[in-house]
Length: 320
Image 1 (cartoon, one colour):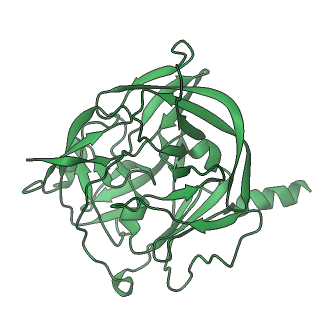
Image 2: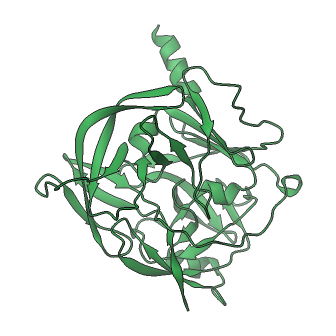
Image 3: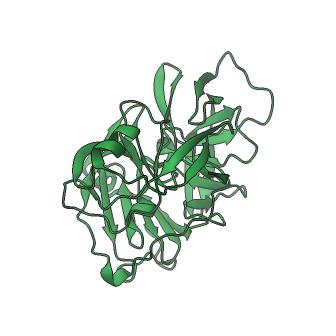
Protein backbone atom coordinates (compact mmCIF):
# COMPACT_ATOMS: atom_id res chain seq x y z
CA UNK A 1 0.00 0.00 0.00
CA UNK A 2 1.22 3.47 -0.81
CA UNK A 3 1.89 5.65 2.22
CA UNK A 4 -0.59 8.52 2.46
CA UNK A 5 1.99 11.09 3.53
CA UNK A 6 4.80 12.22 1.29
CA UNK A 7 8.51 12.43 1.81
CA UNK A 8 10.37 15.45 0.54
CA UNK A 9 13.31 14.07 -1.34
CA UNK A 10 16.16 15.76 -3.16
CA UNK A 11 16.02 15.74 -6.92
CA UNK A 12 18.63 16.98 -9.34
CA UNK A 13 17.30 19.15 -12.12
CA UNK A 14 19.59 20.64 -14.74
CA UNK A 15 18.52 24.15 -15.63
CA UNK A 16 19.98 26.01 -18.59
CA UNK A 17 20.05 29.46 -17.03
CA UNK A 18 21.99 32.30 -18.65
CA UNK A 19 24.01 29.83 -20.67
CA UNK A 20 25.14 27.68 -17.75
CA UNK A 21 23.87 24.56 -16.07
CA UNK A 22 22.82 24.75 -12.45
CA UNK A 23 21.81 21.96 -10.15
CA UNK A 24 18.52 22.27 -8.37
CA UNK A 25 18.00 19.90 -5.47
CA UNK A 26 14.84 20.25 -3.45
CA UNK A 27 13.62 18.23 -0.53
CA UNK A 28 9.87 17.98 -0.31
CA UNK A 29 7.46 19.00 2.38
CA UNK A 30 5.40 16.86 4.76
CA UNK A 31 7.77 13.99 5.56
CA UNK A 32 6.19 10.80 6.91
CA UNK A 33 7.27 9.90 10.44
CA UNK A 34 9.89 7.16 10.32
CA UNK A 35 11.13 4.52 12.75
CA UNK A 36 14.91 4.46 12.62
CA UNK A 37 17.38 2.00 14.04
CA UNK A 38 19.05 3.35 17.16
CA UNK A 39 22.81 3.71 16.99
CA UNK A 40 24.70 4.71 20.12
CA UNK A 41 27.74 6.95 19.98
CA UNK A 42 29.75 4.28 21.77
CA UNK A 43 29.14 1.84 18.92
CA UNK A 44 29.59 4.31 16.07
CA UNK A 45 33.20 4.40 14.88
CA UNK A 46 34.24 7.58 13.11
CA UNK A 47 34.86 6.93 9.39
CA UNK A 48 37.86 8.37 7.60
CA UNK A 49 37.58 11.72 5.77
CA UNK A 50 37.02 11.34 2.04
CA UNK A 51 37.31 13.56 -1.00
CA UNK A 52 34.49 14.47 -3.33
CA UNK A 53 34.43 16.23 -6.68
CA UNK A 54 32.13 18.93 -7.93
CA UNK A 55 30.59 18.46 -11.36
CA UNK A 56 28.53 21.16 -13.03
CA UNK A 57 24.89 20.14 -13.23
CA UNK A 58 25.33 17.23 -10.80
CA UNK A 59 26.81 18.75 -7.64
CA UNK A 60 29.14 17.21 -5.04
CA UNK A 61 29.89 13.64 -6.13
CA UNK A 62 31.37 10.88 -4.01
CA UNK A 63 32.29 7.24 -4.57
CA UNK A 64 29.91 4.97 -2.68
CA UNK A 65 29.60 1.24 -2.03
CA UNK A 66 26.27 -0.44 -1.19
CA UNK A 67 26.53 -3.93 0.35
CA UNK A 68 30.22 -3.89 -0.69
CA UNK A 69 29.20 -3.46 -4.33
CA UNK A 70 30.45 -0.50 -6.33
CA UNK A 71 31.86 2.01 -6.64
CA UNK A 72 28.76 4.00 -7.50
CA UNK A 73 28.52 7.74 -8.01
CA UNK A 74 26.32 9.44 -5.40
CA UNK A 75 25.59 13.12 -4.87
CA UNK A 76 25.98 14.59 -1.37
CA UNK A 77 22.68 16.25 -0.53
CA UNK A 78 21.93 17.65 2.90
CA UNK A 79 18.36 18.40 1.81
CA UNK A 80 17.41 14.87 0.81
CA UNK A 81 16.07 13.34 4.03
CA UNK A 82 17.00 9.84 2.83
CA UNK A 83 19.48 7.78 0.85
CA UNK A 84 18.18 7.34 -2.69
CA UNK A 85 19.20 4.52 -5.03
CA UNK A 86 18.56 4.08 -8.71
CA UNK A 87 16.87 0.85 -9.73
CA UNK A 88 20.09 -0.38 -11.32
CA UNK A 89 22.13 0.16 -8.17
CA UNK A 90 19.50 -1.55 -6.04
CA UNK A 91 19.64 -4.60 -8.30
CA UNK A 92 23.45 -4.74 -8.51
CA UNK A 93 23.83 -4.32 -4.74
CA UNK A 94 21.11 -6.82 -3.90
CA UNK A 95 19.09 -4.32 -1.88
CA UNK A 96 16.22 -6.16 -0.21
CA UNK A 97 12.81 -4.81 -1.25
CA UNK A 98 10.84 -7.54 0.53
CA UNK A 99 8.23 -5.97 2.78
CA UNK A 100 9.34 -2.45 1.92
CA UNK A 101 6.74 0.30 1.82
CA UNK A 102 5.79 2.13 -1.34
CA UNK A 103 6.04 5.85 -0.66
CA UNK A 104 4.59 8.74 -2.64
CA UNK A 105 7.30 11.27 -3.44
CA UNK A 106 6.96 14.68 -5.00
CA UNK A 107 9.12 17.39 -6.48
CA UNK A 108 8.70 21.10 -5.91
CA UNK A 109 5.72 21.13 -8.26
CA UNK A 110 3.77 18.79 -5.97
CA UNK A 111 3.28 16.15 -8.68
CA UNK A 112 3.55 12.63 -7.24
CA UNK A 113 5.55 9.56 -8.20
CA UNK A 114 6.42 6.47 -6.15
CA UNK A 115 9.54 5.10 -4.49
CA UNK A 116 10.14 1.78 -2.78
CA UNK A 117 11.69 1.38 0.66
CA UNK A 118 14.56 -1.11 0.74
CA UNK A 119 16.99 -2.47 3.32
CA UNK A 120 20.77 -2.62 2.87
CA UNK A 121 23.49 -4.25 4.96
CA UNK A 122 26.26 -1.68 4.57
CA UNK A 123 27.07 1.74 3.14
CA UNK A 124 30.66 2.90 2.59
CA UNK A 125 32.22 5.99 1.02
CA UNK A 126 35.66 6.75 -0.38
CA UNK A 127 36.66 3.10 -0.31
CA UNK A 128 34.89 -0.22 0.13
CA UNK A 129 35.69 -0.57 3.85
CA UNK A 130 35.10 3.00 5.05
CA UNK A 131 31.70 2.21 6.52
CA UNK A 132 29.19 4.77 7.73
CA UNK A 133 27.53 4.08 11.08
CA UNK A 134 23.92 4.26 9.94
CA UNK A 135 21.91 3.61 6.82
CA UNK A 136 18.77 5.51 7.76
CA UNK A 137 15.90 5.60 5.30
CA UNK A 138 16.85 4.02 1.95
CA UNK A 139 14.56 4.32 -1.06
CA UNK A 140 14.68 3.17 -4.68
CA UNK A 141 13.41 5.73 -7.17
CA UNK A 142 13.27 6.12 -10.92
CA UNK A 143 13.44 9.92 -10.71
CA UNK A 144 17.25 10.30 -10.75
CA UNK A 145 19.23 11.35 -13.84
CA UNK A 146 20.66 8.39 -15.75
CA UNK A 147 24.26 9.34 -15.01
CA UNK A 148 23.68 9.54 -11.25
CA UNK A 149 23.59 6.30 -9.23
CA UNK A 150 22.13 7.70 -6.05
CA UNK A 151 21.91 10.42 -3.41
CA UNK A 152 23.60 10.40 -0.01
CA UNK A 153 22.09 12.44 2.81
CA UNK A 154 24.98 12.70 5.33
CA UNK A 155 22.65 13.62 8.19
CA UNK A 156 20.98 10.23 7.89
CA UNK A 157 24.04 8.21 6.87
CA UNK A 158 26.40 9.51 9.59
CA UNK A 159 23.88 9.60 12.44
CA UNK A 160 24.52 9.81 15.41
CA UNK A 161 27.88 11.29 14.42
CA UNK A 162 28.33 14.85 13.29
CA UNK A 163 29.82 15.66 9.92
CA UNK A 164 31.60 18.47 8.09
CA UNK A 165 31.47 19.42 4.43
CA UNK A 166 34.44 21.56 3.44
CA UNK A 167 33.33 22.69 0.00
CA UNK A 168 36.53 24.49 -1.14
CA UNK A 169 38.72 21.56 0.01
CA UNK A 170 36.30 19.00 -1.46
CA UNK A 171 36.32 17.02 1.78
CA UNK A 172 33.58 15.20 3.72
CA UNK A 173 34.48 14.16 7.26
CA UNK A 174 32.82 12.98 10.47
CA UNK A 175 33.29 13.80 14.16
CA UNK A 176 32.06 12.61 17.53
CA UNK A 177 29.74 15.35 18.90
CA UNK A 178 30.48 14.28 22.48
CA UNK A 179 34.24 14.64 22.07
CA UNK A 180 34.43 17.65 19.73
CA UNK A 181 31.01 19.34 19.81
CA UNK A 182 29.93 22.44 17.98
CA UNK A 183 29.47 25.10 20.67
CA UNK A 184 27.30 28.19 20.59
CA UNK A 185 29.79 30.06 22.80
CA UNK A 186 32.66 29.30 20.42
CA UNK A 187 31.90 31.45 17.40
CA UNK A 188 34.38 31.04 14.51
CA UNK A 189 36.21 33.99 12.98
CA UNK A 190 34.21 35.42 10.07
CA UNK A 191 31.60 32.72 10.59
CA UNK A 192 28.73 31.75 12.86
CA UNK A 193 27.19 29.00 14.98
CA UNK A 194 23.40 28.85 14.85
CA UNK A 195 20.64 26.51 15.99
CA UNK A 196 19.86 23.55 13.75
CA UNK A 197 16.16 24.03 13.10
CA UNK A 198 14.17 20.98 12.07
CA UNK A 199 10.82 19.89 10.80
CA UNK A 200 8.43 18.03 13.04
CA UNK A 201 9.34 14.56 11.71
CA UNK A 202 12.74 15.07 10.10
CA UNK A 203 16.36 16.05 10.64
CA UNK A 204 17.01 18.14 7.53
CA UNK A 205 19.09 21.25 8.42
CA UNK A 206 17.25 24.57 8.47
CA UNK A 207 18.63 27.90 9.70
CA UNK A 208 16.90 31.16 10.55
CA UNK A 209 17.59 34.10 8.24
CA UNK A 210 17.54 37.69 9.45
CA UNK A 211 14.31 38.34 7.52
CA UNK A 212 12.51 35.65 9.53
CA UNK A 213 12.58 32.96 6.83
CA UNK A 214 13.70 29.44 7.62
CA UNK A 215 16.12 28.29 4.92
CA UNK A 216 17.16 24.72 4.11
CA UNK A 217 20.92 24.25 3.71
CA UNK A 218 20.85 22.20 0.53
CA UNK A 219 24.13 20.98 -0.93
CA UNK A 220 22.08 19.20 -3.59
CA UNK A 221 21.25 22.55 -5.17
CA UNK A 222 23.55 24.56 -7.40
CA UNK A 223 21.47 27.68 -6.86
CA UNK A 224 22.21 30.41 -4.35
CA UNK A 225 19.24 31.77 -2.41
CA UNK A 226 16.25 30.02 -4.00
CA UNK A 227 12.84 31.52 -3.24
CA UNK A 228 9.35 30.84 -4.53
CA UNK A 229 7.80 33.15 -7.14
CA UNK A 230 5.37 35.54 -5.42
CA UNK A 231 3.85 37.09 -8.53
CA UNK A 232 3.45 36.44 -12.24
CA UNK A 233 6.53 34.65 -13.57
CA UNK A 234 8.32 35.61 -16.76
CA UNK A 235 8.27 32.33 -18.66
CA UNK A 236 10.47 33.70 -21.43
CA UNK A 237 13.45 34.21 -19.10
CA UNK A 238 12.91 31.15 -16.88
CA UNK A 239 14.24 27.66 -17.61
CA UNK A 240 11.56 24.97 -17.29
CA UNK A 241 12.33 21.41 -16.18
CA UNK A 242 10.45 18.35 -14.98
CA UNK A 243 10.90 17.35 -11.35
CA UNK A 244 11.07 13.96 -9.61
CA UNK A 245 7.29 13.66 -9.50
CA UNK A 246 6.86 14.39 -13.21
CA UNK A 247 5.64 17.95 -12.67
CA UNK A 248 7.15 21.11 -14.13
CA UNK A 249 8.91 24.02 -12.40
CA UNK A 250 11.04 26.89 -13.67
CA UNK A 251 13.76 29.10 -12.24
CA UNK A 252 15.29 32.43 -13.21
CA UNK A 253 18.19 34.46 -11.86
CA UNK A 254 17.32 37.84 -10.33
CA UNK A 255 19.29 40.60 -8.60
CA UNK A 256 21.72 39.43 -5.93
CA UNK A 257 20.69 39.86 -2.30
CA UNK A 258 22.39 40.27 1.05
CA UNK A 259 21.19 38.15 3.97
CA UNK A 260 22.45 37.27 7.43
CA UNK A 261 22.59 33.98 9.32
CA UNK A 262 23.39 34.68 12.95
CA UNK A 263 26.51 36.84 13.00
CA UNK A 264 27.43 35.92 9.41
CA UNK A 265 26.43 38.25 6.57
CA UNK A 266 26.31 36.85 3.05
CA UNK A 267 26.64 39.77 0.65
CA UNK A 268 25.34 39.81 -2.88
CA UNK A 269 24.62 36.11 -3.06
CA UNK A 270 23.15 34.78 -6.32
CA UNK A 271 19.37 34.65 -6.04
CA UNK A 272 17.00 32.46 -8.06
CA UNK A 273 13.22 32.66 -8.19
CA UNK A 274 11.36 29.38 -8.64
CA UNK A 275 7.89 29.34 -10.15
CA UNK A 276 5.45 26.48 -10.36
CA UNK A 277 6.39 25.32 -6.85
CA UNK A 278 3.88 24.50 -4.15
CA UNK A 279 3.19 27.09 -1.48
CA UNK A 280 4.99 25.03 1.19
CA UNK A 281 8.21 24.65 -0.81
CA UNK A 282 11.11 25.75 1.42
CA UNK A 283 13.53 28.60 0.90
CA UNK A 284 16.86 27.05 -0.11
CA UNK A 285 20.49 28.02 0.34
CA UNK A 286 22.41 26.08 -2.30
CA UNK A 287 26.00 25.70 -3.42
CA UNK A 288 26.28 29.14 -5.01
CA UNK A 289 25.76 30.64 -1.56
CA UNK A 290 27.60 28.00 0.49
CA UNK A 291 30.63 27.38 -1.74
CA UNK A 292 33.20 29.45 0.28
CA UNK A 293 32.41 27.67 3.54
CA UNK A 294 33.09 24.67 5.72
CA UNK A 295 29.82 23.46 7.23
CA UNK A 296 29.77 21.46 10.47
CA UNK A 297 26.55 19.74 11.53
CA UNK A 298 26.16 18.57 15.15
CA UNK A 299 23.00 16.43 15.46
CA UNK A 300 23.39 15.86 19.20
CA UNK A 301 23.53 19.51 20.24
CA UNK A 302 21.49 20.62 17.20
CA UNK A 303 23.94 23.29 16.13
CA UNK A 304 25.43 24.21 12.76
CA UNK A 305 28.74 26.01 12.25
CA UNK A 306 29.28 27.96 9.03
CA UNK A 307 32.84 29.22 8.70
CA UNK A 308 35.31 30.08 5.93
CA UNK A 309 37.28 27.06 4.76
CA UNK A 310 40.90 26.89 5.92
CA UNK A 311 41.92 26.56 2.28
CA UNK A 312 40.33 29.95 1.54
CA UNK A 313 42.08 31.52 4.52
CA UNK A 314 45.44 30.11 3.40
CA UNK A 315 44.94 31.55 -0.07
CA UNK A 316 44.03 34.95 1.36
CA UNK A 317 47.15 34.92 3.56
CA UNK A 318 49.36 34.10 0.56
CA UNK A 319 47.81 36.92 -1.45
CA UNK A 320 48.61 39.37 1.34
